Length: 321
Image 1 (cartoon, rainbow, N blue to C red):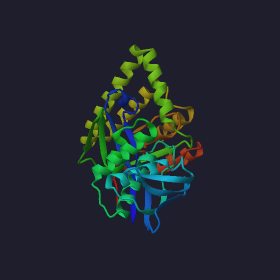
Image 2: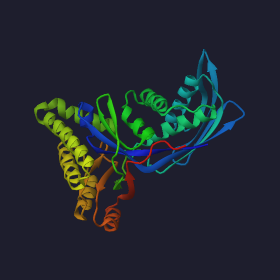
Image 3: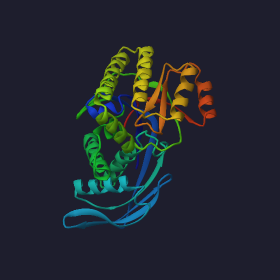
Image 4: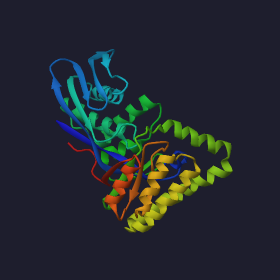
């Protein structure tokens, strides 16, 4: 049994979404794949080319299924083991399972690697138990796993990983935007870890210290998001690019960029990108560029500036199995 789930980008609205403004996310062509095989013993064994290996014992204790006696790379693989426990308990069944994970998503890149592996692993484990869970249930269990691990989470990440496509997010409201075309996009990965929690806290401190300055910036990001959605509906990519650049300028005002991100963004624009901006929390991670006129030259320039260029599409399918 093979299951794969996509990574994702923020096309618009990161940080502002924390304060009730809309954001637009989209799935990308880079995927995480989980291969599941049953084991005769009641053990879970996980092997990941990027995160290591772990094993544990699947037991029912006081009416709850748990993975105990864990050993190996427990912290790195905690999303996988937690969603497995949640699936065991939802189906009230526990079996031995071997999970082999491979991913095209760099961990800590801000491209949704945790949501991708959590959703794919949830489907893989449920398949070993003989159940074909609905996608909404998979998304809910993956969300619960992220909350358990992180203390807080958004439904948005696991929703994109599950359903794919384009997703408008505002508060607790999620809306899959249909009839949007797939788009080519160029991702530039800095190679630096994106610490989402740290950057969210940084913006919160700025907003609380000077609400009269940073409050309007956040609201204007929300307006850029709405404009971007309308422009995508009209297939007006030039305007989408203009609004991406505006969104980036506003993010600069929130001090979440870095010299390397800024350099990659400016490089993409120099080679004809319609729009280029940070995707995700900033402080590292990735930038994105839409509609580069000289794509191969842009790729070469990103490499020359110590970035990792990734050519892909957005708005693709979600879970695949």
